[in-house]
Length: 112
Image 1 (cartoon, rainbow, N blue to C red):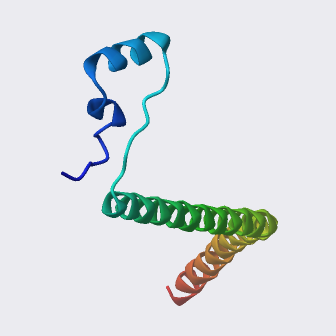
Image 2 (cartoon, rainbow, N blue to C red):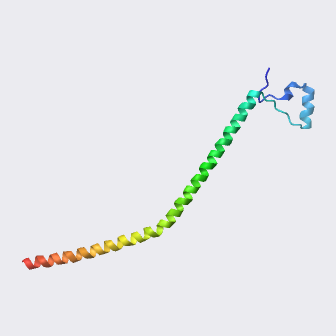
Image 3 (tube, rainbow, N blue to C red):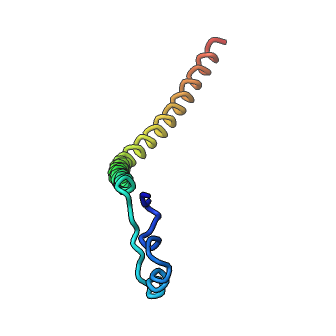
C-alpha cells in the first residue's frame, strides 16, 4: 500500500512505541510518495512564479503612478495659468460685447 502525504510513519509502528514517542514530544515525520512530492513541488513553483509576477506588476504600477504624479505636478502650474487666461478672455469678451451693444444702440438712435 502506498503512503500519501497525510500518512505518517507513526502508523506503521506498534501502538506502545507510538505512545512513548508521542509522549516524549518527538516530531512525527511525514512520508510522501514521489507523485505527491512532485505535485507539491509543482504547486510551490507555480506559487513562487505567481508571487514574482505580482511583485513585478506592483512595481510597474508604482512606477507608473510616480510618473503620473510627476506629470501632474508639472502640469498644475500650466493648468492654473490657462484658467487665468480663460477668465481674462471671458472678461475681455464681456467688455467688448458691452461696447458693441453701446455702439449698436447709438447707431439705432441715429437712424430714428
